[in-house]
Length: 470
Image (cartoon, rainbow, N blue to C red; front, side, top):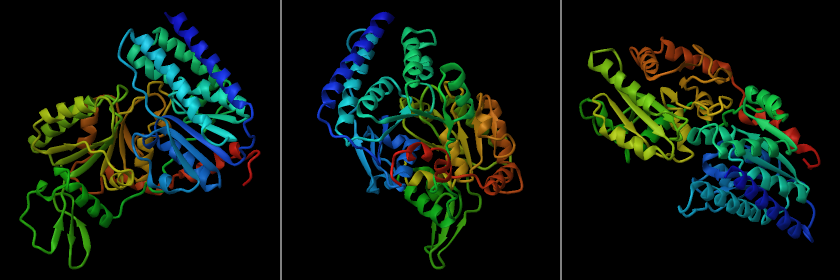
């Protein structure tokens, strides 16, 4: 079966090459100053590729930004005159026959669809491709670049085959084929970018692929949110989500000249915004609701935290906000609905792109459950939190130390019990700022971390500058 799958893929690739050769005849040359940024996924949920597109557009490049419609990208992408959004329609394969043949059919159809979409755009001088997903996009884009005389740059966020192994196991034939495919076609790229030094070393040693490391950095709009903006955001969210409403904190009914959320209050006469006395702590976790993020760890830690409160610990009530979309969201929402917390409220909103950084900049603590299928990538959600000077508790994995500095900007944990103890320690006698939580935030404020634009300019832009007019 594995041999049949491999032959099918080879046949599909040969067909694509033939189609490209036929199309190439008579096509105009050119492409200087044009870059295609390609994601075989949801454009709105691909922040790093959005940042690439914006950085290129700011340097005068004409950018075709290709991917699935799904979630709306950031407004700066939509309003930028140098960026053309080109949607790739998501395929729905009939669920008939063996799964392996369903998968092969999907790969072939996606290959044809991606190729067709690439041929509808103006010839690019460079194509910047996100990996994963790399099957079938790497081979298709490589063939396109070969015949259109474009340069292929792969941005390695992770390895696709390691993600597949979470479902099928490492020794499954499909996983083995995907590994071979990713390594073989990855070596045919002109340039490579990766997200950690650990991945850079792994690409060199195990795949003979030379890459430069571009750490994820927060965009300029990830920053601490002023208190007045926090209040406006909380009042907006209170319209749809009960945890943000003022009655969460038991106080007397405010006079008519005071407007309250669960966390803030506005003196309408003076316009002054303050935190409410006895407010809950705001905990935020951004998740993709997939198998590489064990959300049950957070739920169990919250159960332990609830127990601490019930025993009279000097801890604040919690509002826990979990953002994101993913295949397991409905399952976990049912588990959340079955909980009967007295001191903790949980909501799982999907936020507008502009509201997400504002909420991070308003929170008291972030929690990251990303484990990494390869152990070689870093969670961008933590990068965004750090951009907002938000301390983080993150589940431990191999190269996390490249981002989270233990006892400096956050803490790492291995299980729910350890996370619960960290929540207890960090929120002890909240909202006093003398403890660890305040120390971590002060460290983040003084770190003066490099932002995306500066890092990209130094590291990545030289790859695109050859042969393109500034």
